[in-house]
Image (cartoon, rainbow, N blue to C red; front, side):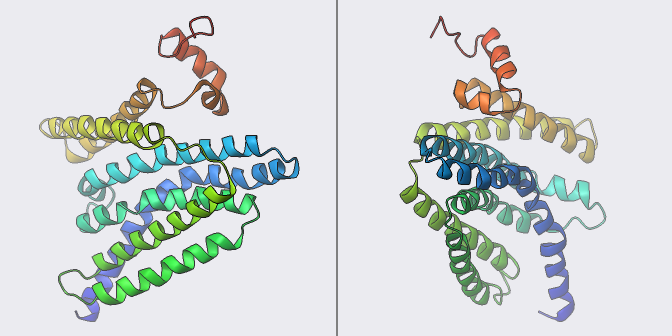
Amino acid sequence: MDEGAAKIQYGILSGKVDTLTSLPLSFNIAFATALVPALSYARAKNDMTTANKRVSFSILVTILIGLPCTVGMYIFAEPILKLLFPAQSSGTVLLQISALAIIFTVLAQTINGALQGLGKVMVPAIAFAIGVVAKFIINVILVPIPEIGVIGAAIGTIACNMIACIIGFIVLKKNMTIEFKISKYIIKPIIATFIMSICSYAIYIILLKILSLKIAAIIAICLAMVIYALAIVSLKVFTKEEIYMIPYGQKIHGILTKMGIYKTENQA
């Protein structure tokens, strides 16, 4: 392609897509940052039980943050771009593909925080370096193909973060006893995300008939967060101990117990 077309595609990727797909990292960074001193302190006291619980909880929360962000940004890619960039809303397909990298990026962020807390500071760097090599190879192969173009860079980013995430998790599993129940960490979050996706998109389609695209998108996205939170609570993804790890967790658990979602000590 000519230089002008290349600049346009690069501008869409770096100016819009990369900015939007990096937003979930800002929500998740607190868990990754907090893990470093927490695990260092637990190691110093030789309290690996607490360390294991903290890492397991942080990974669970990361999945619960990353999965809906991935699916939500994929489903609402076009409305989001039209909402934020009304004059130049191109890049829907690129955003949809780039969104698939979010779950791996946030997981890698949390896993890297845990590895650094364990003193494995070189593992994240090595894992990411291997991912970068894979991304470079994919870029060289796919980007020059006219039918793919800048989408090849997005595919490379997915591969890069996926590789870094997998390598980091394998090393972490070898050094810690991480609770990883399939039903809790994968099936229930997927069910909650599916419920959120179906309900929010249906609401968006209905609202489009009576409201403008911007207002319909804002309402649908806001309701999506509410629906997702209710689905997580209904599926009882968190145990009592994990709820207590959340700010105001004791009050939240008390409310959920009064609602009959969680059992009281006597009922248990």
